[in-house]
Amino acid sequence: MIRRYATACYFAGAVVARVGDEMSGPALMLTGYAVTGSASEASALLAGVTVAAAAGGPVLGAVLDRQRRPGRLLAAALVLYATGLVVILLGLGRLPFTVTVPIAVLTGLPGPALSGGWTGQLPRVVPGDRLPRANALDAMTFGMASLSGPVLAGGLAEVSGASTAVVASAALIGCAAPAAWALPARSARVRRAQPGSLIGDLAAGTRVIVHNPRLARATLASVVCCAAQGMLTACVPLLGERVLGGAGRGALLLSCTAGTALVANAALARFPQHLAPESIIRAGALIQAGAFALAATGRPAVLVLALLLAGIGEGPQLTALFAVRHREAPDRLRSQIFTTGAGLKVTAFAAGAAIGGPLATWSLPGTLAAAAALAASAVPVLFAVPLRAGEAAEESSRGD
Image 1 (tube, rainbow, N blue to C red):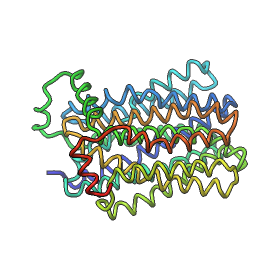
Image 2: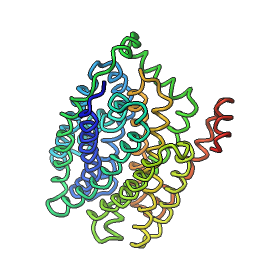
Image 3: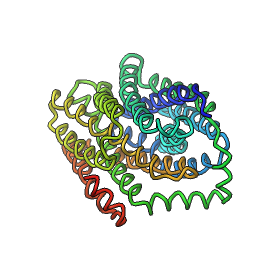
C-alpha cells in the first residue's frame, strides 16, 4: 500500500531538484560568458554538461529498474551531479577551457536522474486511477522549475555574480537527495521478472522504444523540439544584452516560457483525458515554431510575447509525452524508457545549444529562424514512423 507521505515526498523532491537543474544551465552559461566573454564558449559549457545524458540515461535507467530501492540510487546521482557543478565552477578561469568542458561532460552523466529517472518512479507513488492527474502535476513541476530557476539564476547573477547562482543550483539539487532516498521500494513481483543481464535489459529497453510506433513517434518529436529549444537558449545571453540591456536579463526570458507552460499544464491537469496526447505533441511543436519565428523580430515587446507563446506549446507537450510513456512502457523497463527518452532530449538540447551559440554570434535572427524551422519539422518527423494497422484504426476513430 502506498503511504500518503510518499506523494508529498515525491513532489517536494522533484520541485527542489528540478529548480536547481533549471538554475544550473543559465547559471553555467552566464558564468562561462562572464569568464570567457564568448557566447560560443558559454554555449559549449552548457552543451558539455548536457551531451553526456544520451549515454548516462539508458544505463542509469536500466540500473534503476534492477534496484529494490531505486530512490537510493537516485539520491546518489543527485549528489554526484551537484558536486560536479561545483567542480566546474572551481575550474573556470583556473583550468584551461579544454579541461573544463570534459569535466562538464562527466557531470552530465547522472543528469537524467532529475527528469526521467524521477518521473519513472511515479506509478509506485500514486495509485493507477490517479496517475493521469499526477502525471500532469509532475509535468507542472518542470514548469515551476523552469519558471523559478532562470529567475533565480538571473537575479543572483545580477546581484551577487553568476558563480553564486551555480553554487545555489548545486545546493538545491543536493537538498533533494533525502526525498529521493525515501521513495518507495519496487514490488517483489516486478523484481522477479528481471532475471537477465544489464546489457540484456539495455537492449530490451531500446527495442521497446524503437519497435513501439507510438513511443518512437513521441520520442522523435520531443527530441526535435528540444534541439530547437537548445538553439533558443544559446541565444539568451545575446538577446538579453542586445534587446533587454543586460546578458543576465536574458535568463529571465526563459521564465516567460515557463510561466505560460505552468498555466497551460494547470489547465490540462483539470481535464487530463479530454485530448489525445499525440495531438498535443503535434500542436505543441507548431506553437513553438511560431513563437521562435516571432522572437526573431528582435523587438522587446514581441520578444516577450514570443517566449510566452512558446510555453503554451512546450508545457502541454511535455505532459503529453509523459502520458505516452506511462501508457506504453512495460513496468519492468519503465525507468529505463524514461531516462533513455530524457537522455535523448537533453542531448538534442545540447546539440541545439552547441550549434546555436556560434550561429547566434553570426546572426541572432537567423538562429531563431532556424530554431523555428526545426521545431516545425517535428510534425513530419512524427509521421515518418508508421503506425501498425490496429493503432492507425484506433487513432482514426478518436479523430487524432
